[in-house]
Length: 213
Ligand code: PRP
Picture: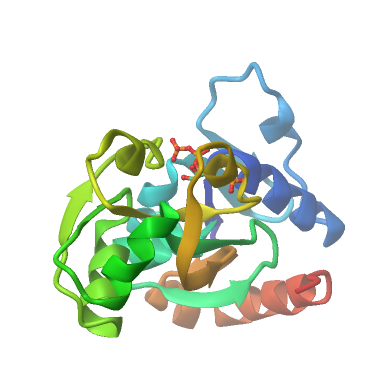
């Protein structure tokens, strides 16, 4: 039996994924050692391998087949647009992609003004404004702390993830429009899906039994 390889998005999502896997008897003790600098972890008995990667790199590993299976946020899947099969909503990491800004920016969205939109997700923002809203905008790519953009006058609005809403609230900003709901998803390489169909299907069945959507 060949190894099935999992790429997990680093951080909170990976912890929640390992907790979920433990519930169906998939453990990887090596991975829990926080001081370890090891990059790849093996469960010899089950013939499984796990590695942690930066979120946006997970769909890349899966598309090229370097990982058979990946776990990453829906935001990353949409933004990266890789050729992977999304097979399961894992139900955690729930949040929303939203257009946010000061309340007085709302008319600019309603009247389809040519505004500036700052975001870490230029493809999602482009798709939303151009294909859903049919509004021409200027997209400005940022790498973090997106809420700063309207505050310092870089852009009229932002497209960003809202979870609790506290970052917006503490900075006097609001959700102006909702783009889409997000959560952690499982993705599979299309060739692996065919070649390892039995093993992957059985894994999905077991996981479905544990997920509370
Ligand atoms: C994310 C997101 C928002 C914040 C939303 O940022 O970009 O800034 O969390 O969470 P809230 O609604 O619960 O306040 P993250 O902390 O990942 O860092 P970043 O700003 O560097 O993207």
